[in-house]
Every structure is written in C-alpha cells, then in structure tokens.
Image (cartoon, rainbow, N blue to C red; front, top):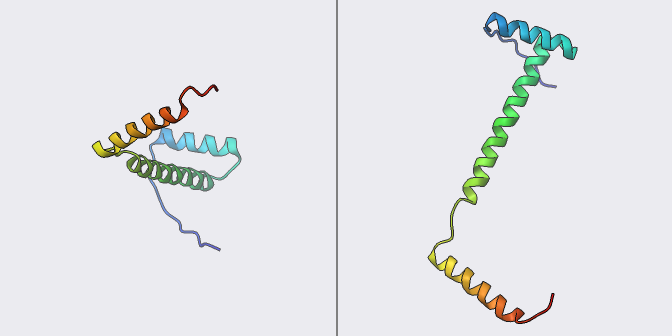
Amino acid sequence: MATSVKTAISLHEDLFRQVNQTAKELGVSRSKLFVLAVQDFIKKQESQKLLAQINKAFDDAPDTDEARLGTAMQTKQLQNLGDEAW
C-alpha cells in the first residue's frame, strides 16, 4: 500500500470556495478532490504525449521514390482489374 504525503498549496479564495463546493457536491473530502483532479490532469498529459508521438510517427510524407512506387502500384492494380464488374 502506498504511503500518503501531506502537502500545502495556496489558492485564491474564489477557487478555494469552488473546491469546497465541488467536494461537497461529490461527497468527497477536499483532499480526495485534489487527488482526483491531479490524477485526471496527469492522465490527460500522458495522452497528449502519446498523441504527439503518434502524430510524429505518421508525420513523414512519402519521398519521391515512395510516391513514384505508389503511383506505379495503383496503375498496376487498375490494369489487373481491367473491366472487372463489381
């Protein structure tokens, strides 16, 4: 079981009131609300990092040889189909 660590944070009064109200509405402690919020934030950050990695992997456009090969493959496929009725 993980151990808990206490920490102190400073909030503007308006935000503090919103935190208290939200915790009350959800039926959780203020500490639990902060834990949930931080977990959600970290999860979103990890998702954004993963998306950035995926986008980077697919970011490279085909070079001239790849584009030429793709066009040749399409032409060959069309020739193979001929007048095939679908």
